Length: 310
Image 1 (tube, rainbow, N blue to C red):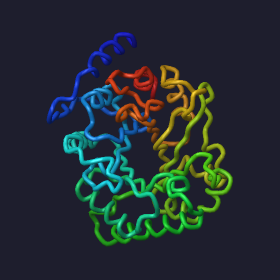
Image 2: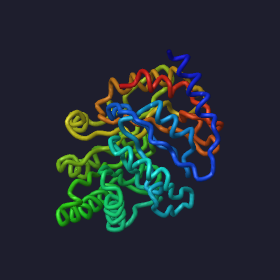
Image 3: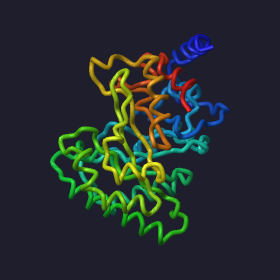
């Protein structure tokens, strides 16, 4: 069965993207959010990307705010109208928006307005990751600065939620920290950020995490987090919005065993969403993580994740 599936998918995803491609909305029922996926940072998505999604039938996906039509200050992503239409037809999938990108602490009020505007345009999207790995991507910063900023963002969004009933269903994810970064999130950062994290978790919002392991050694980074945080992971919204093998030659290229590792991780983690990074990639820049290579060929880990995942 797996061999037949590999042949059919491999044939399907070799199609080239025609002009003004409109993705068909193939009928399928999403799996549970534990079988998720990160969408590629590219514009537009190719037919192979949509075909891979049809194979995986994810229950959750992480996408970029720039793909929803927001200006990208880095000039790397643009709006993808076809993808936006496809998202509206797949509102049964849990869709999480990664606010993309600002290389530093964006003005909290401006960020709150961005989130509110996106929710107004796409009301079925409720979950927003407010930034990505600030301990690494912001350059010179501190845990105090990250915590204060995250609290300010929460209060600015909360004002909208309390003031306008149609915005009350917006949910925020406290941002993921960079695994093993120089600021040492596992042993220092999470404890320093505890007041800010608890502000989110005590009020119905959630926590995002990134977890990477080594080939043949699926360990949970969350197991290295402080006791007070681990104790809450099973009872609050905890989404793993990136995961997979750590980049580097010893961990090899993506293969069927990686799909098996993803399934093992999903079985062991306390998270309710597991979104591997990344489905596809522009010019092969993310070949250590993708599920469709630069030529549109399905990777074997896609097939394993689609058959062995939750």
